[in-house]
Length: 81
Image (cartoon, rainbow, N blue to C red):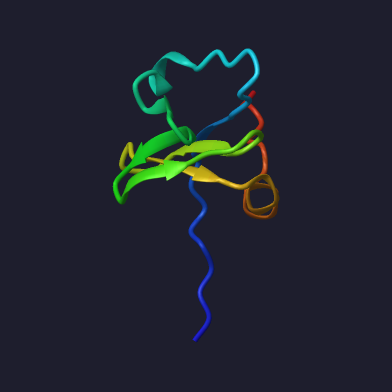
């Protein structure tokens, strides 16, 4: 069987370590640890790198996504007129 991902609108911000200014909703979610930046997810802390996307899922959970995967899976949503 084959499946298609349901179209769903997500919120995402790209992570940049230099001069990082986290959007308010990510404060406390992204943290700098001894081995670099990480994000708290439902599966536990995950390492995030420069340019990774931080996605808020459909249930309000957060997770990182590599830029190439993000580009292949998501496209911008244009504002409705």
